[in-house]
Image (tube, rainbow, N blue to C red):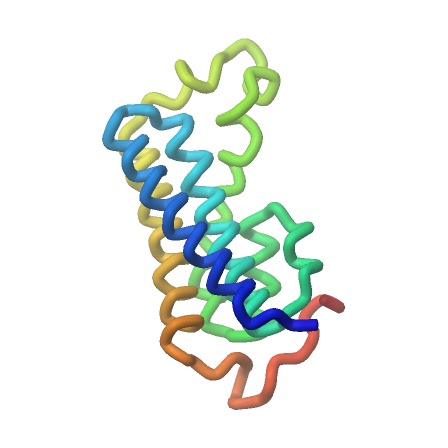
Length: 152
């Protein structure tokens, strides 16, 4: 059963996570900022899919690339976000030393430009989802009701 409040709840959390990531970026805590930008994009895409498809199966997906692909099956506009797949590289190695053999995430991720790029990618995802969810954009291609992408 589709809960109309679930998507907006996820979007609020995605927005908050993006704000926190921005604060961490400004503090020079790039490894944490990178992870939270990935999470903000992930949660925003889940917000969209929960809003239009309603299936909680999307909650099992932890890849921005995969979520963009599923969202693109509902609205072709999401295919513009293909570059956001780069955020997936920050899901594991920014959090665990074992994800960076011989390195430590807090010492490895020191490039402010890398964090700025990740911020831009996450922001593009959030803006599109906000437009689609809050803007009342019809969910689906060619004015058809959304189907069940990838069996969700």
